[in-house]
Length: 92
Image (cartoon, rainbow, N blue to C red; front, side):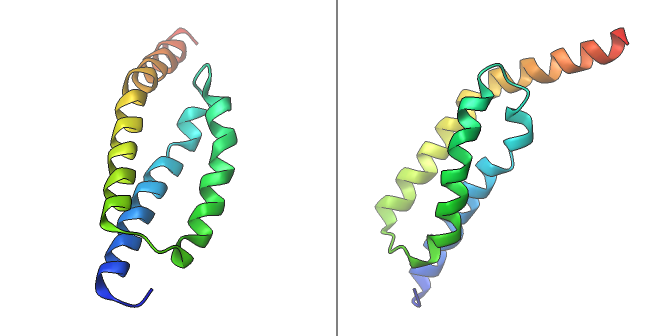
């Protein structure tokens, strides 16, 4: 990867993957979060090799859309988890 668009694609994909990986600690608190955490090893491995992958604009857009959908799906469960943790701290 040497041209400007390839570098931009790499940055955008890396941002998506890192955004998901940043949720790892929060997912541990979800009821079914452990099943998602198993997939994080795959994401981490992919992130390490991402600079060797040739990505088209369409590929990048699909990954960005999938990332946005994934984050949207997690909004409810993560907010419930935060509320539950806050409530449990008050009880202690």
